[in-house]
Length: 458
Image 1 (cartoon, one colour):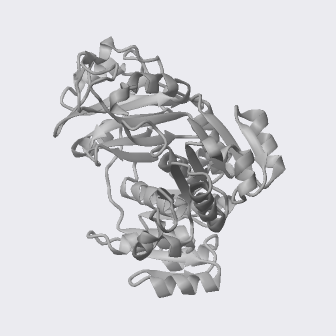
Image 2 (cartoon, rainbow, N blue to C red):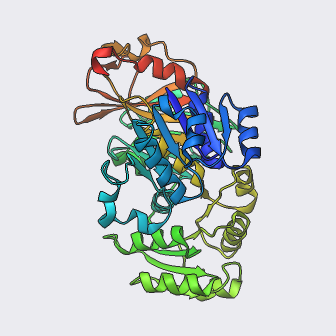
């Protein structure tokens, strides 16, 4: 597929890396020649320096025969005009735009993006995606990562194993035998900074980070088996009243189960805006790094603190200070993934990476038609895909043990009609089944080849 990626920043670069590694013909466009040079030197992509919304720049990027354009520059307006140009001048079939301003995302303006108005097929909102990811972390404070599949019936959860975990040094094969009715399976283990798909004979050790597929009804039991307690917070402090903090607070206000939230915002104008837009949330104008301000917000009674300012270092320090003050759960927004290793020393329980959430959102609309959902793990280390089995697919009608999956691939769950199964080697994949597959990034192209269908289904 020929794809143009507009914007060579963190999101654009990551998307280009994913797509180019899967043998797509990718051209990246950015007004900064240095970013274009970095992309072309480190990735298997072509590069064009210039403004993505200019027709002559899109011509040089090959828009006349492009099948998709992804507009992910820092400017909403440039992204919107780029999609308009791609449609009106070059007839590009598929157009995806990243939009950040809340006004553009208001539901009452949804008709704006119809083909006869502003032709954008898919709108991605980083703030909305990040707010949703942050809420999932708050709702599952014993995990460092969580994402739903099969309409929420299966959950992929990340668990950091402590020294008191009951199943340490236990082979995974034996765990399956011990908990035969548990609909859960370990699909990924990060040890010493390296993520891998475990074998049945592998053991788990303190300090490991594991990714587990579990049925939503078995979530509490799964957490208990790994030494965690499932608990829901009742009092939350949000440090940062910008778009992300505001979105999280608004979502907490409309929840059926009441969670008391307070927002701390340093900028007075931003704090006043948040106070005007929120109904039941207390907004405090002050510094989230100030212990007196944290005490005023009730840090001694808080169940969780979420730090979502626009500065990574502030988020890390504010979370560390909240943890030192006794808060049991602290979550930080971190844009720079190289800062993630500091979580452990600082006592931070989980973090949200806007790049990962945005990349996952875009990949859901880029994959094959039979790929219904995609979640990107870590810094592009692996992907988890929810796929549908088509009758002409090479995996249709075969047992899992008969399918030539690469070593870095594991099947985490299978849905047959309304029934969700924990897969075994003998589980047969039939037409219409939904399958959740964990794959290391290097093995994603091989998985997609196994999912290919005949031309009569394209």
